[in-house]
Image 1 (cartoon, helix red, strand yellow):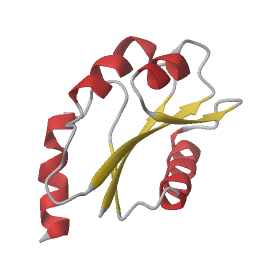
Image 2 (image 1 turned 90 degrees about the horizontal axis):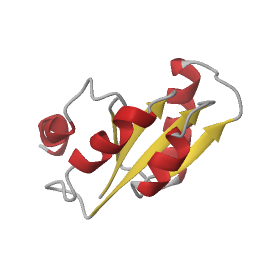
Image 3 (image 1 turned 90 degrees about the vertical axis):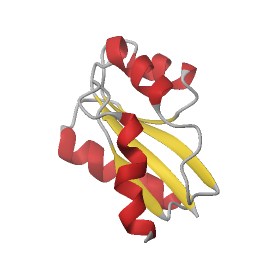
Length: 108
């Protein structure tokens, strides 16, 4: 099974690197996990930070808002072959260490 961790981001260069570093490398129950950052028209170095953090990146040329970034991310994650998608924020609002708590009930 494949897990895609989706992070919509707009001007998150200052916090995104830390978020990416705290995402678990392996999540129980999944053969593979990948991180997808939707760079929603950021004017800072969000895309650079995401790529440095080994995330796959999809970029909107202009800010389209969280709803469209989420929609783009879901569509792209499905094209990546995601069996499960977990959405977190690029500003650290959600603790990436909680990802297994979100996926455990799905796997059960």
